[in-house]
Length: 255
Image 1 (tube, rainbow, N blue to C red):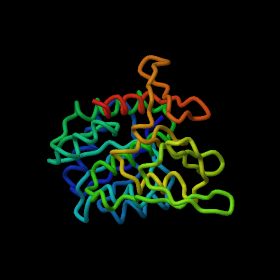
Image 2 (cartoon, helix red, strand yellow):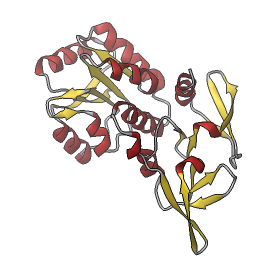
Image 3 (tube, rainbow, N blue to C red):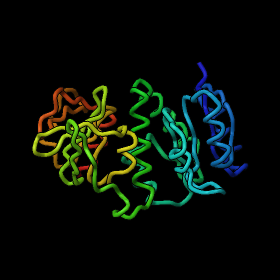
Image 4 (spheres, rainbow, N blue to C red):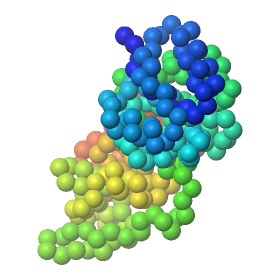
């Protein structure tokens, strides 16, 4: 079966080079489109089915390609391409499927595709979490821009809470926030909205249902080779099993 692939690259020569190398690999690719700008990429993603794989150049002629991630919901793995951005490479080693450093070689592409094939069985939500993490790491932002206060519901009252009081946010039909003192409140925001507005150096998206403050993580216990179960303080109501991808990410985070 062919791998449905989208290429986002503004250099025609680089696109032709990548296409030539893909045709030389044993895997078969269905190239859905090649787009050259942020605007075209956003438009294509909004009007077509999600591909299985995206090759995305980090620096496009009309800006930073992470604007595409910010403007759309991408649920497939991305192989990033970069010419010189060492900071991007360092961050991507933590959160991405792979990167290709220009000029790319056939071996680079082959190894990246093999990694993609090895990880295809993981839930698509994990790719979304990773790409949001990567966007946080690569988008310079003043710490004062992150949300510092929340207004939480408690019956007919609203309780003002500072971000430093928050242990974790979680979704269970509604979205709740649990404070370090153990109390929980409903919050009128989605986890995706919250994830975009809080400081990623202090909070970690453990999986699709929970975002935890780093100091709320009490322990990481191995339950399968390469995979963790997380214990929080205050305790969470159910076990938090991390995917292999998230387990690897969090291991690197604490180095």
